[in-house]
Length: 223
Image (cartoon, rainbow, N blue to C red; front, side, top):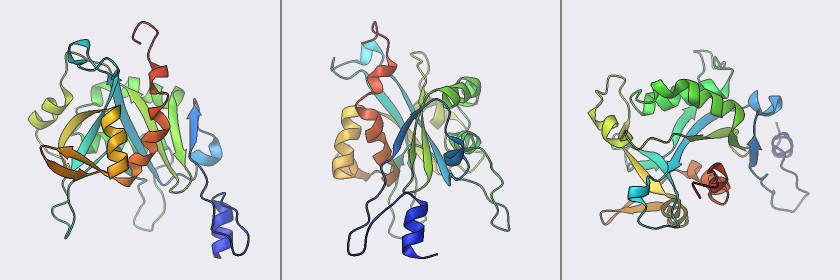
């Protein structure tokens, strides 16, 4: 397939001598269109919640997102990086896709990367993936689902560390970040944690599509 044909198949259009224009990611509420759902290559889940009132040091900060840090020390020249939870659509030994639903891919990856601590929320997560907000990025053919899980009683990062790693989870830490911290990290491509720059994964660029209107997911009382 030629460069022009590949570009056209992804919605990229340009004329001779021009730099290709990358298509913009799509913010979708509700069901993912069938043509996009059938060609996805990866799927991710971004977990967020309203910051518990006792922890709201800055009244402007109402929302925080949960990210995981993947240990890449086994890869030469790589550092641990922070990301949402997700990964590639599974294939069989012949390279044929065996997963046909991006929601299943996203849920599987979430459990693998968090040691299964969110399995008790499967019903809620699946409903939100069906009915809620998601972003489809045609540049990589991946979907990111926005999932709200409020719980002032449960400490997910601590629960993660206390859960045995029976499935060889590559993540070594979970941590909450405010939207301002994520916005700043996107500009520098890293979080400043205890004086150390810790990289973020490129897919977190999708978070920008949620930053401006995530508060729409809060009720008027919560705002």
